[in-house]
Image (tube, one colour):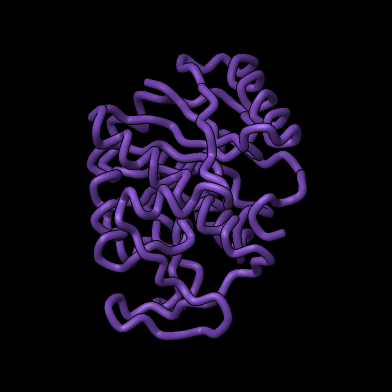
Length: 232
């Protein structure tokens, strides 16, 4: 089992935060290592898009109803669209790697930080193909509702909480830290092929991936409070 932290090459903040995550992984005593994974950037995203034959289909300016999925797609606050696309592609490359190696992996964004030791066996043995381990507070919309559903469950892992209208994509809390199994990765690649490329936390939603997405009711990671490298 390995973990990968998406890190922007030659970016001091990203590199330092990735180091903090790796250090915290050791401090809580996790039984897996974490390696830095070079992020796709606005400079090379077109090459990656062309390589995988991916087309971006998520709206930038106006909310629209996606007829294929039945979901209402609301534009994200994004000053530089290429950064949002690059973020998706960074995750996508790891999804591909998960399928090719046929091994589960942890995927982290550089702002994640460990707060407790993960029960890896519990996650691997779960029925879910994708499992979020992040504290939702401050990481997703309606985070208190999300957290309350988690906290009130007697189970260690539950389906992603429903916190909004059925037409609104609902997934993991921020997508900063999750376990990905090959079965889940395959479904993500298929969803990308079927619906196009979207922000990864919109595509990775319970409506498109029924019975695939889970979250731990005990949280193992939080967020390092840094300026976003995607929205600005």
